[in-house]
Image 1 (cartoon, rainbow, N blue to C red):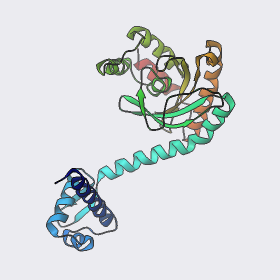
Image 2 (image 1 turned 90 degrees about the vertical axis):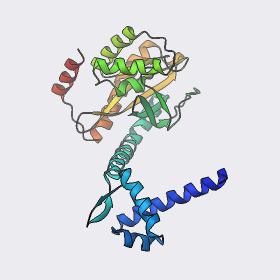
Image 3 (image 1 turned 60 degrees about the vertical axis):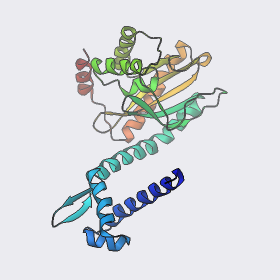
Image 4 (image 1 turned 135 degrees about the vertical axis):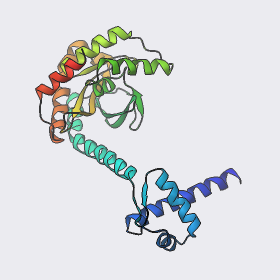
Length: 267
């Protein structure tokens, strides 16, 4: 089969698989009914449904039939969380970008990387290369560091070394980076001192949910000429304040005992 024909066949299989999911969601639960609803023979329907069961998109029980699987629930919760965070944060980060004149990012943790969920460009003529939907390193970005402030030192070391294993150069030695991370954890904000992009600095702070867990982070980024040490310190409180307002909208409440407990775990 030619490559184009394979692509078309794959697309058709995907569409049929989605049809199976939608049919089950609508209440069609047994193989006979599914094949009739979809207009497919039973062997094809059984193969499609079996694949979806294997990937946990469907569940199957004898004498009961098919039902939606746990994977869909997981994806639904993830999508809801992302949409909720982005929706809640949007107005706040727009105000922050307008007030500072700088670029503001919203991001979440995605494995060993930071995923950029939203970006508001500032009023200055400064080009920040980041894009919505891309992944960036945790150790060298302010946003990435803010996302992992609650992690123990052992996890920080793993994430630092992860980038080394990927063959990426980084100018900050591990011990200096760890000292900075401990300080960031105490102050509640993190800095990028031209570590990820030449002549670009940023200030970032974590966003928390009702459980007090870090679910995202925001950052203000600009050219180093607009981000001397004094301005970064003054921006820190503004960024933390905006992150706090987003957190409150997500149901978070300040919980000093838990914060102290997290700090003790990092020792």
